[in-house]
Structure formats: C-alpha cells, structure tokens
Image (cartoon, rainbow, N blue to C red; front, side, top):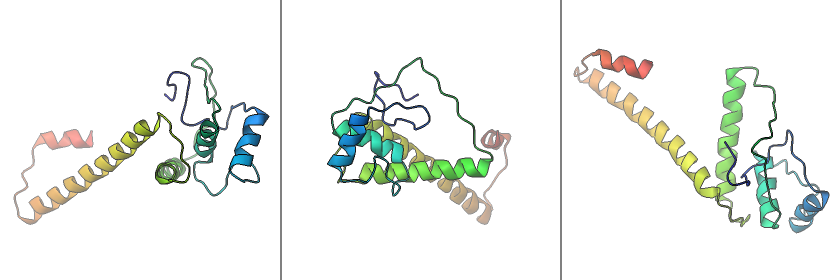
Length: 148
C-alpha cells in the first residue's frame, strides 16, 4: 500500500536496512543523540522524512514482504492507530521539519477523510436525536444498512 514509484513516506522499523552514513547525516543535521526520536509518536516516519530532507532516497521493494505479529486486542489496535493518526498530524503541521515530499497530499487526504467520517457520524447521531425528540422518527428497514 505504501509503494509509490519506489519511494515511501514511512520506512517501517521491522525490516528496514539503513546506510550508516545516512543515519549519521540525520544525527548531525538535526543535532540529535541518535537517529530515532522518542518525543515523536511516529518516529519511523520522522526519520524517513529527515532522510529525504538530507537527500537520501527512501526506497522500498514492491516484492519484498515482512510479516509482523498483530495487536493482541482491538483496544490496543485502536490505541496504536490513534497514536499514529495524532503523530502524523503533528508531523504534518510541524513547520520546523521543512521536508517537501510527494506523500504529504496523500497523508492530508487521509486525515481529512477521517475527519469527515467523524463529522458524518456526529451529524447522524444529532439527526437521530432530533428526530426522536420531535417524534418525527419513522422506522424503515433501510436503516438496517447502517448496522450491516
């Protein structure tokens, strides 16, 4: 899903190979103790963007596969997704980074889609509450589509 002409917006830490010179460049250019920063919720994405800013290529193979263990519960999955979403917004709105990547548009569209999904759900709940409060709600089986 992340493959886009050989380049990606995030190099996952599970099976990524880095050139030591590239990591050293990131450390020196950003005055860091090490290449990964613990103060970011999306440290892999931040490192990828710092590598791109330093003019290193962040390439992936379209045929390589890496299998990782899944989350143990739905709750931990949701917590991780929320962490990634908020971290991505923080990274996208961070003007100090100064990375120009072609993936920003895709990431912004994903964030806007999430926001519109939330807005539609909130408006549905509001509409349902108003319809019930004013005794204008009429049940029809087409409403079951939402449950399915």
